[in-house]
Length: 505
Ligand code: CA
Image (cartoon, rainbow, N blue to C red; front, side, top):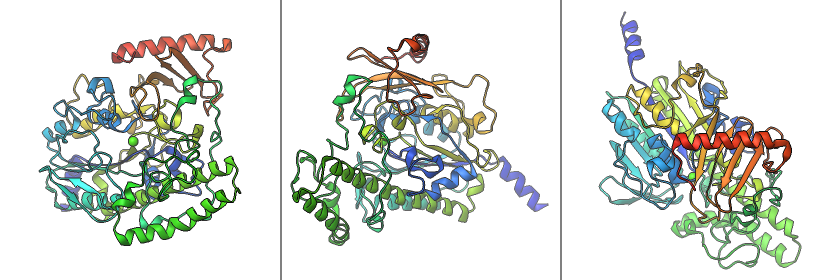
């Protein structure tokens, strides 16, 4: 009898939510997504969520850049509605956000890790955030009283430590949402000491478009400043010391600030890993043994290995959190989500970074485990967007969803019962114009087959047939065979702009 009562009580409990979030984690680097890196760089712990829950292939951001994606998540609104359109601005925390409404519904709310919205978090019972982009090594954290504390160690590990500590000391009578937000795998991709030699001696596969010449698409693509071939820095990205010995190939100008933060012991381990590899590359270059393409290949390998090394620590820490939830008995009534603020170019189109409405940075990973609700091993094909997270959390918490939220609750989709009128396309807008990497503002719409976007300057359309051209190598907006599609997509674009009250011009 007692057992029965306790089961009934459990069923009535509101579920907890652990939102595991990272920064710039591309779908290509999560093995459950079946990408080109899945064999060489598996993510077994993140994959556990796919196995025990659902993985969404058609998951998109509203604006492919750090701060705006986070603001869309908090508000359930597109950037122009929540006011955080570009990095470098300040989020107006006085507006409605889901954590505030969840608090009113009796949830405890906590946020630990990367925030990147300039203003102090609101709506959280507990928060501890990295200043700005934060650091991988011996990071500072801003405390709720405004003071800064420095912690020795590796950021991804420390964020998990602090998240688990909060779980331990929380008010155990209340349901909770914990947002555990990592810096990794953001630039400058500094791996943990234990992973510095991971992948040494291995060749990571290159994407087919590493040598993209940008023909057949907007002229502006050639003006980007995010190419592996031309825009990496000697210290910051490529992890050398001193001045570039090949400034025309690897730029001078930004040093490795992570190295500057390390303890002597950390520096020793770091140098033992990088110095011999760096020396060999420089010696080969000086001996004129390297062609331009050899140098490109080397830079790609340095970049992708460091990126994947930071993901190894991330995946381990996802595992630590999942293990903690099991051990503490929380797993059964806790929804676990893994997502990242946008995707990333891992050499596709010759790039690193994000911003463009092309697939690799438009997509966001989204994996969710919800015991008893989400079917284990499911791969829903509904189109979802980061503006949907807030209404989803609110519905889970039993809170009212404000009328002006632009996203839709995913709860019916998660139950395998998507409404008939579920969206068939998504609206996207990028505003930085042109910002650090010289990507112009643009907005567009993506359906299951086509993607249209518009660059107001220089008044140019792009149209892609994702079925025939999944790598997005040729815009067909001027192709007469696509005249009808182009018109239909332009109409859809205008319709969506009207609905969301778009401001991009
Ligand atoms: Ca990001």
